[in-house]
Every structure is written in C-alpha cells, then in structure tokens.
Image (cartoon, rainbow, N blue to C red; front, top):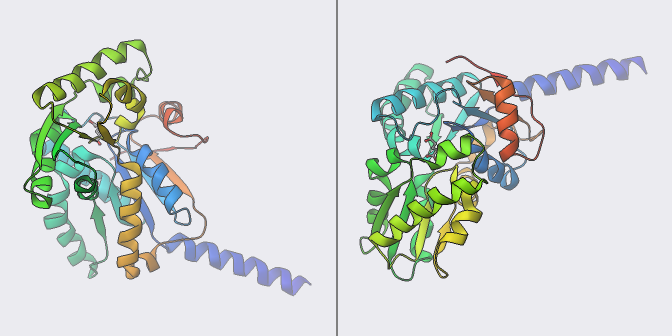
Length: 298
Ligand code: DGL
C-alpha cells in the first residue's frame, strides 16, 4: 500500500514536471482587447495551456509611433518566450500591423540562431481576418474600423489587395474607442456619440460598403452599439472566431508545434504590466471568470 502511495506521488510529480516544461501558447495584446480573442481561442482549443500578457500600463498602442509599437511588442513577445511559450499570437491589430513583419523577418531569426532551433513562431490577426472577406462581400466595397496605428500602416489595404485586387477598401480611424473601452465607458450613453461619428464618417466616404471589418480586438465590446448604427444589410466582421479557427488550422498543419505544446489542463496565466488589482477589475468586463493575474516588469 505504501509502495503504491510512493509510486503515485513520484508519478504525479513527474507528470507535473513534464507539463511544466511543455510549451504554452502566448496571447498578447496592448491591453484587455486580446481577451476577446483569448476567449474564443480557449473555446476552440480548450486542451492547451495559455499565458496572456496585457501591456496595460502602456496601452493604448494605437496612437503611438511605429518604432514605439514595435519596441513594446517585441519586449512582450520576448517575455512570453521566456515564460515558456513557443507560439505567440499577437491578439492586437496594431501590433500585427506595425511589428509582426519585423519580428518574423528579423528578431525570430536571432532567437532561432541562439537556440539552434527554428520552432518558436509568432502569428498575427490580420491575415486570417482578410481571408474570410471575399466570401462575405457582394458589393466588393469593404470598410475598416481600426486604431490610427493600424489605419496608417495600410496593412489591411495591402493584404486585401493581395487576396482580391478588385476589392475597394475604405478605412476609418477610431481613436476614441479603445480609451472608452479601457475606461469602462463603452456601455454609456456618451459612447453612442463616438460610435455613430466614426461609423457614419466611414459610410459617408463610401456608401457602397456592405462589409465592415472591426480591425481592433477591443471593438467586439462595442458590437451592440455598432450593430444599431450600421444600415441593414451591412455585415460586421469580428475577429475572435476567425482567429481561433486560423490557429486550429495552423496547429493541424504544424503537428511538430502541436506536439510540443502542453495539452492537458487548459490553464491560463494572466500577466500584466499594470497593477494586479486594476487588471482583475477591468478584465472582469471581458471575462466571465475570476482570475489571479501576476504583475510583471518589462
Ligand atoms: N486591441 C488593439 C488592436 O487590436 C489596440 C489597442 C490599442 O490601441 O492599444 O489594435
């Protein structure tokens, strides 16, 4: 009996140790918006273990320069690698638009060389989003609502052009939406003014738009207000399910990556550059569970 007990203790210790060394999936956003993506990813792929990193102390990124967005994003991705992630999803359009290419084409090469392994990967949210657009639109006129950083990068315009050169893309920057959401004011009557302002400005520029991409992971929190503002027949593309499907597909096509990920507990750690009290309080707007975040310094 006691031998069995000792065996079980050693066995569970070994399992926990192996799990500790198995890789996690990192999900990064400048703030809380990435939680809308994380939720859908965890629903689609509940078996994996995740680490969410919100750079809440430095959000919003959307109004910052290219250099700053790149530098902050790379610091966060690097931290997620250090925490045991092999695969990192930039659940932030601004970071995907401004930093993904430099990270994939330059920084990852350095990491691979140092580790003598080409396994670590970073994925963005823009490519999977644009891929669904041609099957949705009938008028071929597409609208994009996004942060000023994403709009100025022209990333959506270029990616949509690659997918279908016949698409006519019109962009509208919405600089007030992320601050309203981060301040918890997105359900207030005051938020209606800014929702209507940006949606109408977009549709005035091109009344033929029949598909609008919500190109910021914060915007699903304004979905009800946006739906009330757009004319009937205009479809809204939110990214959560699209990114989750894209990740599932990626893991199917990359079994070597899937095999190194810990897939047992479905756990999630939450890291924030803000205070843990502030993160728990604000994250409750996005999540339906109580969490215990950890503060990090970058
Ligand atoms: N959630 C981020 C995005 O998808 C933007 C938030 C910010 O401006 O920092 O673009």
